[in-house]
Amino acid sequence: MTKQELYQKACALPLLPGVYIIRNKQQEIIYIGKAKRLRTRVSQYFREGVPHDAKVTQMIRNAFEFDVIVTTSEFEALVLEASQIKTHMPKYNILLKDDKGYSYVRISKGPWSRVTAALQKEEDGAEYLGPYTSGFAVREMVETANIAFKLPTCNRKFPQDFRKGRPCLNAHIGRCMAVCTGKIKQEQYQEAVNGAVRMIRLGKAEILKSLRQRMEEAAERLDFEKAALLRDQIAAIEKVMPGQRVVTEDEKEQDVIAFAGAAGGVCAAILRFRQGKLSDKKEFLFKDTLNIDTLREEFLPRYYLSGGEIPPKVIAVDAPLPDQELLCEALTQARGSKVKLYTPERGDNARLVQMAYVNAVERLARENSRSGIDKAGRLLDETAHLLGLKEAPHIIESYDISNWGDGTSVGGMIVFENGKPKKSGYRKFKIRSVLGTDDYGSMAEVLTRRVQEYEKGTSGQFGEKPDLILLDGGKGQVSVVKRVLQGTPLQDVPLFGMVKDDKHRTRAIVTAQGEEIAISMHKGVFGFITSIQDEVHRFSIQYQRQSQKKKSYASSLTQIAGVGPATAKALLNHFRSVGAVRQATIEELQQVKGLSKKVAQNIWEEFHPADEQE
Image 1: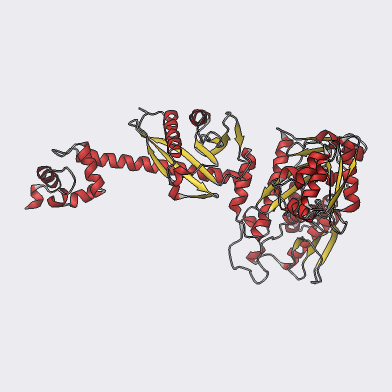
Image 2 (image 1 turned 180 degrees about the vertical axis):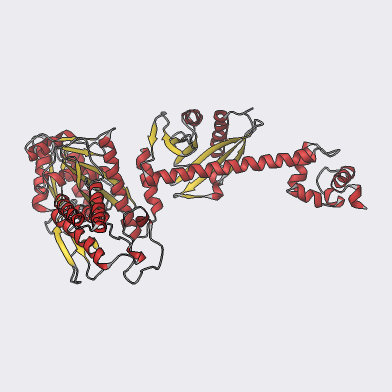
């Protein structure tokens, strides 16, 4: 059937809930979906002019016919869709293959062996522990064991790199025994490696019991050096005893899910908490779609209702789903007890959702770096998510006001394009309408003039519409500028303020509603916003100082007979500096427009006193 024929068939479907099954010319099922209203949902695939992402476009191109199964409720459609997808595994439904296979703990061969995590077992002579199903757990075990026994994790090779450089930071903070110094005996090192391996095999409780017994034995035979080493190892293990960076107060089992999108696709990150501790992390990459909302709607039923995962008691997701109540009912049925599915807006669980999002962003960044996409895109995506923007802000304008003790003020505007400073877009503003020191009024004047330039169709930076405006200031500045932009072509541009702490460091972002968004826990965004705030402050201060310097030079010229403010300004515009005026001849001075021979003579004589002329 042609696309037009499929559309006409879809228009004849009932406005009832159900499941639709799309096949190709070979009668293979290529996609299965559910709908509240079959006619509305199916017809949109084949209607001309409706935009679709790459995956759906390819599916439509291969579609030849479709069937539907009408159900008595939306809940039945949801459950039927999950079972049909599990049975047929259609090509264009999402395939839930995470980034993990089995993982191993690898103990390299040789006298100075290393303990590392490995994704696969190789025939390289090394010893492998495993396999383990959770790569996250393996990395946690290896890191904890290396810290506890102060084993090196750097890239240096021993004994080749003995005494070839200073010990690294880990040695200075007590996390490494500094093998690179050449002062550690090979027997002592191997004993630490054996201890780390025993800890991984037996667990922390057993290794602590063994180490305490050996420490007491060493002390009894007066081997105090050995006893002290064992004591330090025990202390190190106890220090990392929780083996867990993220612990929730609620010990109920829960999953935390967030999605992130970038040029390379979409990533779903799942943090699995069991008994209040982060027990595993899973990531799923989808490179054929950029529609996060559609993917989220399809992903959760597919992940939990396909029989592979038993739903936990609580599922926190980064955004509500269209059929959330129905999905919650289906999850409860699959688990056999009540499941809570919700989107936390504040508190610890909201923080964990943000943590899942950061993991998704980081995974996309790693993938994109392999594809040649720079990390600036990752920062812009993360900034957009944190500020609640629909898209990454590729053009960011930032404004600051700088004033001097005499009541004069100037404004600075800087531009970041694709995450990097665009110096050609920087602009300076001399405050004209505001008397005295008034940051609010000065900021309002600057943005008013910015809007006027845009409305006039000015070429260059003023002719571009920014994706984000950041003000160096808090609630007051944001409120004033919000009123300025109201009713203008820039009123829909997201507007935020950048707030500093009492040490003049970026602390938070202020929304147009006056609410604060903490950014200190988001390392990438924090550094990015701080760099913008520092740059706009530097630029405006520099302009202020230049203005003051020029003004002081002009005032020194006005002390000369016949030179007023206008003439002083003309001289500086012509010669660019007082030094150049000093070096000019009378004939060169007369070239300044409006300057008489007598005034030129006065200026020359001011800089060339009679005693110098003799």
